[in-house]
Length: 198
Image (cartoon, rainbow, N blue to C red; front, side, top):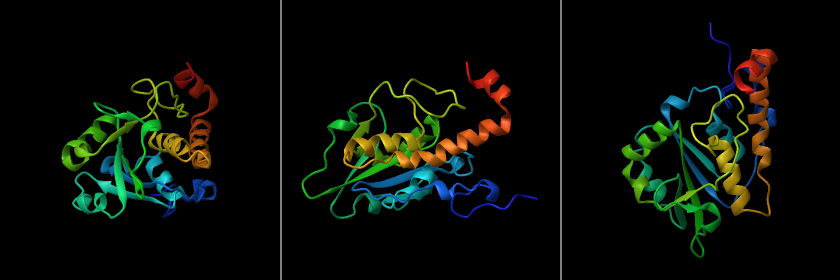
């Protein structure tokens, strides 16, 4: 029998993260496109971002039929957070006068995120931004596939703290860090040190 789960954070009720999730306002709007294989993942950081940001929207799937209408809303300027050719550092991005930035974030493994771009060609036409080099993930339970690879939530916090420097979005990381600490506690300190603390 499956354990009862929180309908918001999707964690088992005994490990509900909702008390740690803030409700933050941002000038930037977010559209999180989550590959369907990620939706049931224990560390679903896109969901944590969507719950913690009032201006965020989470959509789950592979092909997004309504993507054109989401990207064409009046007075928004969409930009894709994804490295690659032509991607500008986040510090160089500015939306046009009187327009609000819509940050589009594909969520999944690198392979799944690239698949989302392939299956939704509208994304390829968007201007791109990328994170600065040298960042380090707090996700101590995962071997990063490349230097500077962050979880979706960590990447969003980096972007918002850069673009909206008068605010601080670090509170979004509280449930993420609690989840990691809980996983370490469940496996035991000795097992964690043997497998992850090299």
